[in-house]
Length: 317
Image (cartoon, rainbow, N blue to C red; front, side, top):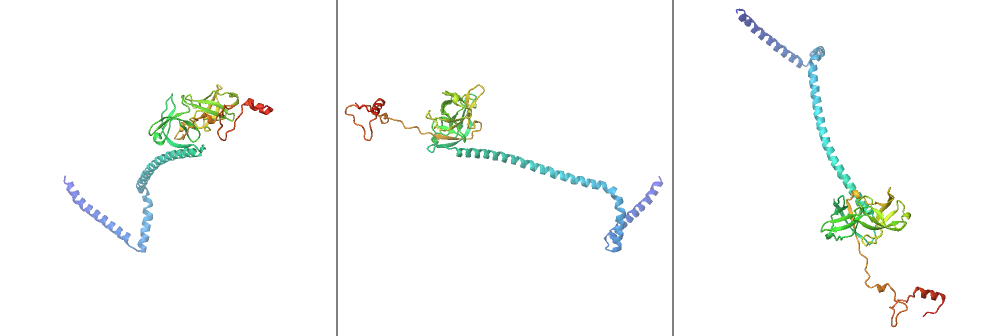
């Protein structure tokens, strides 16, 4: 018990002395490090050369921590750049889809402009709004109707060929019955043979060609155009090409792209002039009755038997 006060009595002055010596040494080191003198500079260099290489093992953890901090900051920057690139990629994909849609619409409009039509035919271009078809009916809706002067029965085309006809007219919309519908019947002409046929839809992508007089005169690849015999479709509109199926049936490969209808051209069909007075085309009977006077500028036309008698020199009655 008596030894502890004795140790504490000597320990306190020793600690004070050590602290004082350490402070003086640090002050001396600072003064020596701050003195601008060639001799002191050489001494500082010698101390650094001797002490610093031996302290590399002590600085290794600090250097490693510093490198880890730099790597973490680099990783954070890379993560931010990756997120920015992902957002830009999503925007580029959206722009790419928009550009592709605009390119397709532009191509279809250019195709519509390239179609060569009769100069007397005028048209109205409409946008396909919806596919109103079903497994048993093939039709689409377009955004033109009665307010645009559309009439029931008018023909419609895309940029390549005939699509169908108007089968219902509303104030702002119209329904187009496609050539592939089972209710579609269109008279056509097959070129170059000139064969007449009836294009009949059967809800397939290739309508059937029926009522052909001489099928042997038709070969695959022949051109199919509208004949105009129905009074609805103008003559000469491209429909497609003849194909022969495995069951030896003649069908039509349509020129119109039925799977991607975006714009349709509705042709204004003007009905032909009706003849109220057939006498303007049919000549008067021969011989003419008594008292009959020919109109000015009209000459009598003999019957075939009378024309043959005149050729042999026989006198007329």
